[in-house]
Length: 336
Image 1 (cartoon, rainbow, N blue to C red):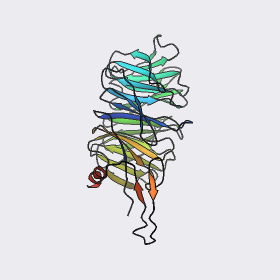
Image 2 (image 1 turned 90 degrees about the horizontal axis):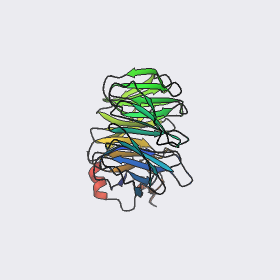
Image 3 (image 1 turned 30 degrees about the vertical axis):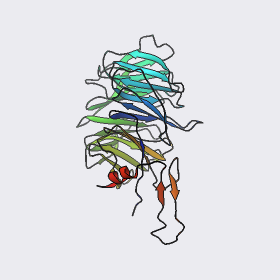
Image 4 (image 1 turned 45 degrees about the vertical axis):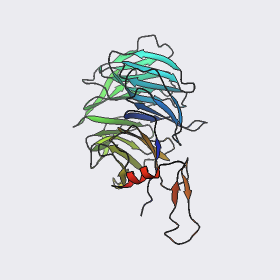
């Protein structure tokens, strides 16, 4: 029998968690930022979920949040018609970028010099962060509100999704290279630079496309409506979560379902693998973030693998222990 997942639960938010992102691996470990409808994005240590700080300044729900590679800067997208750039070390607000409508998505270039935003006004904006008062470059062409906008191909291209269309843009000419139409509303998008893979979810479908051509590589169907999916950095497996409160793990090569379990007490809005692939984070309508082990029972972060002395097989089943975890909550989650 497979060992049971023992998640780390990160509380603190008071409303649904709608987006999350990891930084790259830094000399201080890696970090996790969460966007929440409570308007207060939070920064955490990525491998433990320990709270570091809350970015205070938005006056509405925060729909998108991201960190730059080395976790020195954060960016957030909000319902108060602004995107903000923050010092992720001090927590200070550095720049406020006024928009004409709700902002849904923010993404830094690899060098952290430019910020890409997208939102309800159907426009992509590219801000030069060294000249934040200057007018941004604007890319138009979407026919409905933009849900996600990401840099791709070493920041030479942009991938963006509105309701049922994913578009690929050339950064230098600001023109559309290709468009992909899907059958249902796009719920999430992830760009994987290694191998140039775009992960898209819509309805019950988890689809993988070439980020350079938008040609489909493969797709899987889940048992429930999926709101988010993430591909493991080594491309061995993927995780997905959605409307049935469950987390699903699939073998990327065969499509076989490896695990499924109740992950939260409400629909799951976002899932992402950590940069080292050792864990994945999920954010939910229930207001919590949870961290899950990719390999259950491995000693990593706060997970300590305890193997009893007795040699009989039953007793030797490794037990994962966590400091201060509410056992009742885990029991409740484990029950179908």
